[in-house]
Length: 619
Image (cartoon, rainbow, N blue to C red; front, side, top):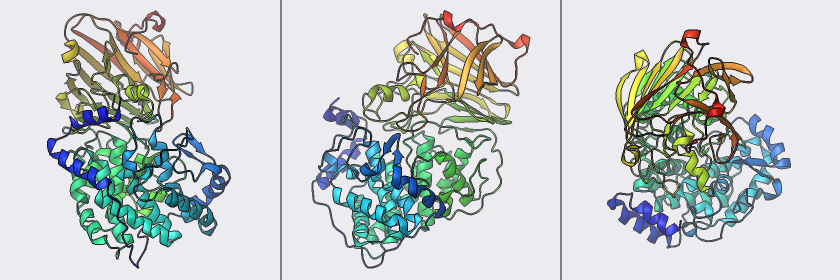
């Protein structure tokens, strides 16, 4: 699809009042960027992380390179900041606003990741031995990307994240070009703010970066404007949340991302952030299981504000939750790292002991969390993403995620990547990649060919809920207009099992698939009492199937598809999905049980052999 067609599709989904501001931005982009004076005083208001970690990674980084979102960057390619790390193809050397990011065969995210300079910010704490490599790479970036030119200036989010890195590097190895670049980055953010439907996590990043710039360059020619803009951050952060604390973008990773920006701004002295931070953190604490893993909802691009390693950061959301909980005086999640470098940089105090937050419904965000013993069940009955575009939400209405004490059990299939692979993007945000019901093989919400837009979005509503009793019922209308079907799901968490009742109201005969994507380390095999779910060959749970359904177990196979999981952005690994399929006449109610202990003979439901089922169109 052409860039013009995608632009028109997006234009139809925004508020008319946003259009004049966007036209004004296009005019500003065509004028030469300002070159502000950074002033005489320059400082890094953030403490450096403990040097031991960066020193341990410096040697391997210099000798072998490092990973960038699944691609390995060798030392000889490390300073090629305008090239795609995977395709080795350079992005055009032109103004950033003229680059076609969505229509390009390359995904800009990998090049952006390298250009955020977070690996250099992290290694700058290693000491003098890191100075030559860091200064050489930094000089290359500044030379390759004058203000406004190149991929690194195509998104204000990238400008904001790189500004943080520059300030951190400047604290260890200050130089005049570096501080001038910091001032140029801040001036760019003031001149090109995200507005309207774009003012989500991007706007939080811009304001957080401006707060840091005003502290790092207090005498700069634009510092007063930067401080005034940063004062908008408490209101912008509150606007990113539903009243119950659920992120408006329906993504746990992006919610953690804006919380980290809030923590950074709080450490810089921005007041009024605590109410929003507290609401968001209390919500995320409900998603943490006994092992410290966090239920993952919606998109994730593995972004972070502060680097804690050269390579990918495992457990990013948990780290941010733990930092926020400690800062706000809330119980820290299980599995917290007391030596987390992020906590050191943000001056995080000692955390309170973990306390299970219990079950709760979040009515505005549309999630019910049922917790019992070491089990966490999350039931989605909310909107698909934020109101304007739904950009980072998925077609996952009435999905049920399940975590046990050992970690994730039933999950979504992750994000994959945003650009350059449209079939994979469509699958990852579609219904077949989530623990919900798929009818006749179509998504409950219709995705657009644009990777962040939707043609239609299912509307879900909560019918009844009793968190104390572990029960909730909800329905959605995603199939009503196209198939004349309403899907209603009842969820009940008991001492020994989880029971799902899926009712399909409508007429005619339909192909129904109850999709259960499993965590990648799990396997499934038919047994005498149901489908056994195994981890490292050891029994974990038993899935008892409605006798009208036949099970199909998929692992690997064609990509994109349910046999693959994306644990990180741009990475795909084999995983098992159990699809319980039937072709019933509607209306019908199908029962699925997940037993946490071995079901007795009377409780076992006959399982029809998986091989007897012809592959349905939905899986």
